[in-house]
Length: 245
Image (cartoon, rainbow, N blue to C red; front, side):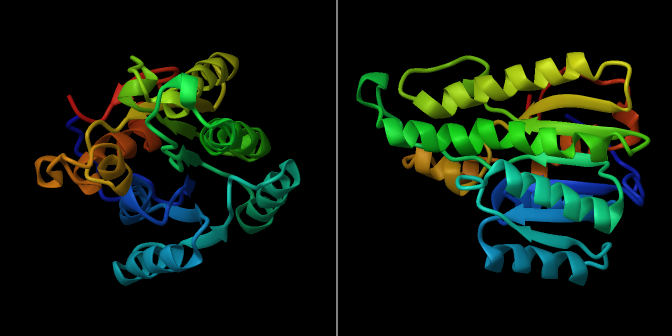
């Protein structure tokens, strides 16, 4: 979508981004910070998070925070501890971007490894559920909060062999709709974004024969994310949006 955000769009907002170390999460964290947000960088690889942290600081954006966390192994208590830390540090949360995902395997359901299925569901669906649940009290402290789920084309129209990834993304869409309905007429809005064909490591793993230079970079699809986290989208709730036409 085409949206021209003002430079101070997210001034004084606190936004948590999962999977912030690379790809779309990294681009989103930097873009949100560039428009004034204090970004909490959540991911499993500390070095990657530190690199994003340094890039945000060097750009002169508000100082971010790092919260290392492996969503695959995180327990409900880990999410409670995260929420407690955010509460002590900031007292509220204005935005939550669910971006971290595992691709799993491109294989028929008949042959899908059950352990891998559980692993993909844990990161892609159970983690966003637990994280959102833990953060809802903080989101309620915001004047105008936004929760965004990262979807996929195969999370809206499934295709053969996409297995747990597709099913988990359908789950994200369902969770988004349930939350949006529950939180209607509150200060929290909930939507999803399908990034479309984007130049990421995950895309390259799924389509190894594709020329990445034909794809948009994560930085080129940020307008929809900025729109959803800024005040211009405060009436948008329960919508499945797309970053590319």
